[in-house]
Length: 263
Image 1 (cartoon, rainbow, N blue to C red):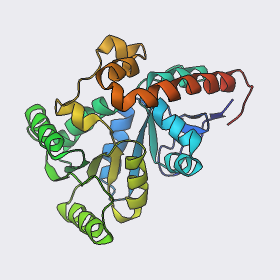
Image 2: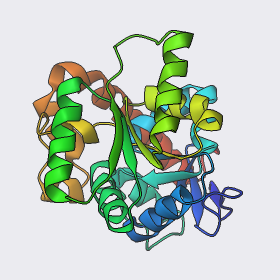
Image 3: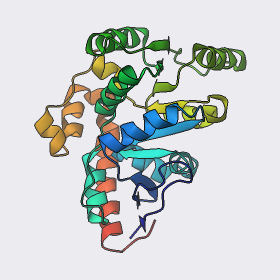
Image 4: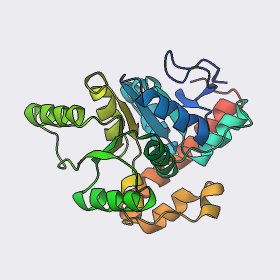
């Protein structure tokens, strides 16, 4: 039924892991995730972290190359409650949600306390400015060395080289990437060997913490209904994602759990 307890070599080793529709999901917690990310930051080695939900799972299910990108990550957290439910049913009763926007705050808090420099890549200029202002308010000691909002097009090779050189020269040890799924995961994988630091793909966390997009109430998040709140807030942008992917996920996940299909 898609069980595996093997951690990624040199990555989330020691963390129990399961596969959901063929995509790896690690059964970590906020505490263990932050400890690992901050610990990796001190090693000056390339790492990247995916924050997985139903949308990412279904994109991976539909695109084998993207599935390989996620499964090659050094950590894949269970951002969505449906994935937490699957982890529990697959033998990890202590699994909990590790939500991207909240993980961002925990990592920044630890980075501020330990003097680990961070950077931000992605989002709009307004989102990046709002994010930096909010984090400076919450964590006055946070050392932000780099931030860049790329244009809504593919960078030229020269521009990309300049971005990489700027990030490396800044001394950033943890880079938050907010390009949205699947773009940010592909970007992190493509740049892993060029950036000797930890990349953390956090999706909409930039816009959430900048105050541009409302987050679902805690009770909706706890019950796996965040998708419904976000659909109500941004129906034109998100209707296809949720109304197409969510039913398919439910059917395929049920088939995995009862053994009708292997992934």
